[in-house]
Length: 331
Image (cartoon, rainbow, N blue to C red; front, side, top):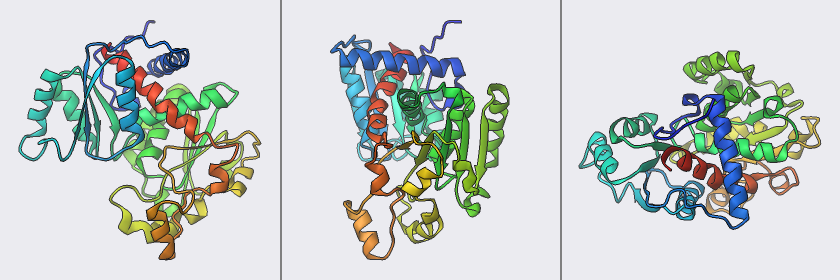
């Protein structure tokens, strides 16, 4: 059956069927091939796109802006300082106004309800660039990267997410793997395993029954065996810096190291990360915390710079997959 996503929002992978996700991945691959061949189809010519950012970003903003420009669209960037949303104007009113001006809206911020309300009231496709509980555009890029570097069908791939098993990337991965029939393990301390959202787990387990996926949350390092992908994220997100001492103590045993990769018993295992990453002490925050006695590296530089690391291919694929989402929904 033909896939048609025109007019649809992209709020979470849970809203899509496996066939629709496959369509977006194949479209992204096609658009990537065309870009490398110097072909720009201008699928979005004459379209106007609004980027709403309540959280800062490098990859998400650049990916959306470059994708828009290459496909012929016009872009307006609004951050929390240049928008009245939620301050002098309600979210509902802002959504209705932006929907009159723009063909599509991207939102990156905090509450999932905000991106859902934007979609509800704007009348145009809305795309989730990140919320506190989800990051669907990142998972699309990750799936594309896996298919480029792991020589087996996606349904045979095992992903292990190491660290804070309750964060938005862990939840987004559960949803992506459940939809695509993959094997996924969230590997972290038992204190955090106990805090995983039961509602999220219930929903992904229901999907997994239909797709054949295997989803687990565990503190048992045996889950690393036969992993094709080792994935991690920073230990303290934006606005959580005061929690660094506690997080370092809790998550240091889950730092991705060469020894951890060896426990997969897979010489071809790849390392992935949504970025930015603390893998050395070259950033001001890592240096400052190290001077206080806290090593906030979630991955060693040895792994980050190794042949196993695909993080920059992954970062590039943010643009190709985001382009696919926009082309599929508004071109």
